[in-house]
Structures are given as structure tokens and as C-alpha cells.
Length: 244
Ligand SMILES: NC(=O)c1ccc[n+]([C@@H]2O[C@H](COP(=O)([O-])OP(=O)(O)OC[C@H]3O[C@@H](n4cnc5c(N)ncnc54)[C@H](OP(=O)(O)O)[C@@H]3O)[C@@H](O)[C@H]2O)c1
Image (tube, rainbow, N blue to C red):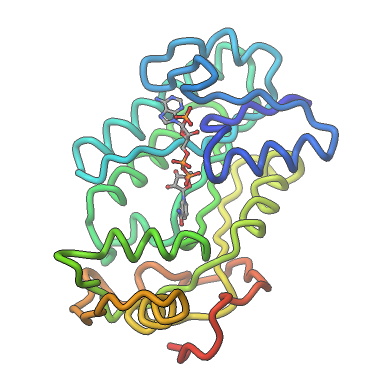
């Protein structure tokens, strides 16, 4: 079995490659550093020869709607088109819990993920969609993204961060044994409010940035699972945060 990881040297792609290889699965990494550009299509046809499964963990720094939508839609459409020509049998996509809910935040990046899911489903290769909540190790980066003029603007909405290794395990199953076409959500064991989580995380790191609570964009529960989902077992590493 051969798995092509689009974005194979990223935060998710790199440990996923290690886990698959440890199970004896052949892996081809498909990132810019590997000479493959999923956006232009350069190098894809050659790289997909003999591949059974594509795992799509591409990412873009574009957070504006136009940039995020065009990146995710075009790269995913290219993967599907070249994958079909090469006889690929599964396309596994990592998305985010809540994107596409009618009452979710409409920030540009999330609209890009919605477009990516739509593009993945539109080809003839069955798309398995794994939706994860924010990774626990990503929370400090999320705090930086919410910082404006030195203050952290934190919505009073829910967040249920998951340990990255547990997402990698689910992606491994999706690439190998799960029924192609499945849709599964995964979240951590505990649900917090963003502002409480951000304050506790900053205090734990000795960071004195002020956290200012702001209104939620969209419904407060839009970005946590509302239905059946896999629950991670690893607790957030900072203890004592009030549960939401
Ligand atoms: N962070 C979270 O909490 C979270 C939660 C749920 C879902 N996700 C999703 O997880 C996915 C992966 O995120 P990540 O943090 O692993 O991203 P990342 O570390 O930024 O990695 C992205 C990868 O995409 C590759 N890439 C970018 N543009 C490319 C192009 N045109 N052609 C080929 N490869 C390209 C990069 O290749 P190079 O290294 O060669 O540049 C890099 O390996 C994202 O889709 C994100 O939405 C993230």
C-alpha cells in the first residue's frame, strides 16, 4: 500500500508519515520542499503513480476569504483530478469541526475549508472527511492570532482542544482501514470557554498579556461537536481551567 501525503512535511503531515512508515506503509511526501506544487499541479502526476490513498493535510497562511478559498479549492481539485488519472482509491481530508455550520463564524479561513470539503466530495474518488477541533499544541499560536495591539481578544464561545497524536491516529485509520467516504469528528475530552483557556495558558507560560473577553462570532457552540464524535483521552496540559 502506498500513501501520498499532500503537505507531508507540515505539523500534521510529518508525524503522520512517521506513523504510517512505522506500520510498514510506503509514504510519498507531497509538499513544496518535495518539488510538488498542489496549486499549480506541478509534479503531481509523477508523484501519484502507484498511490492507493491521498491524505490531504495542505495548509495556507492566507486567512482572507478569497485567498483561502482559492488555495483550498484549487489544490484539492488538482489532487482529485490527478488522483483519478492515477487510479487512487481514497482521498482523506483533514478539516475543522464546525466549518460549514450555518451559524458558525464566517472568517475567511473557515470558508476556505468549506470550499475544500466541497472540492474533495466533487470528484469520483470517495472522500473521507476527518474534522478535528483545535490541536492542544496549537493554542499558543491561536492566542497570538487573537492578539491585537498587545491584547488578546478572546470570544466567550466553546473550544474543545484535542491532542495532535490522537488526530494522527484517526488519520492513520482513515488512510488504511476506515470505510472510504466516512465522515468523523474528533475533539478533546474537555470543553472550555476561549477566554478561560487563553488566560490559564498565558499564566502557565508566564506571559502577562491581558485577555479581553469579546462577543462570539457565530453561535457559541458552533466550533465544537454537536453530535456523535470520537473523544480524545488526553487532557489539556494546564490543570484547573473551569469547564464550560
Ligand atoms: N491547527 C489546528 O488546530 C487544526 C485543527 C483542525 C484541522 N487543521 C487542519 O490541518 C491541516 C494541516 O495543518 P498543519 O498545521 O499541518 O499545516 P502546516 O504545518 O502549515 O503544513 C502545511 C503543509 O502544506 C504544504 N503546502 C503548502 N502549500 C503547498 C502547495 N502549493 N503544494 C504542496 N504543498 C503545499 C507545506 O509544504 P512545505 O512545508 O513544503 O512548504 C506544508 O508541508 C490544515 O488543513 C488545517 O486546516 C488544523
